[in-house]
Length: 160
Figure 1 (tube, rainbow, N blue to C red):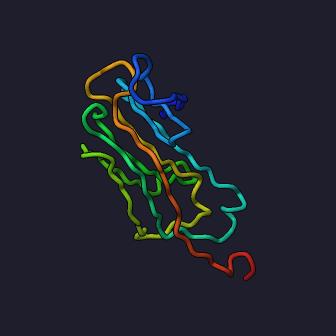
Figure 2 (cartoon, one colour):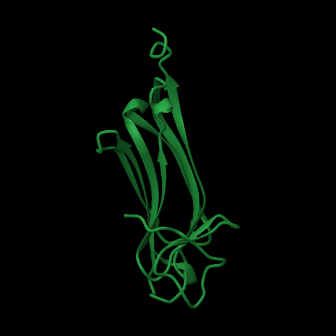
């Protein structure tokens, strides 16, 4: 279960850290002394599900730092959830230590494209923790998260 992201101003500090925090002014997720998960969930509308669209893959990108005073454990996970409650596709990333900010990006193409009619939602989550157990937000940080879908349409689905 993903924790609700609270708003904070800066990393560090002497209080907080028991759940991930988000700073909207610099688009950054901060992790503290307790293991936490920050998740973005995108639910699909019925109109989109009935569009005849097929997802062929996706593009992703984010920046993270995991070094020195901002080090700890960090991972990312993407799940496409089916309308029947099953996971249609899952991808995991282990985000190791860095020397400054590091960009993770790429394109994934599905072996078997996903019919949007079968997709309920997708979740992109980041799980992290400060490895020194300091009060505040001294763990890893993630920012500039971006994801886009590659797709095609079956034009005959709406008008045979």
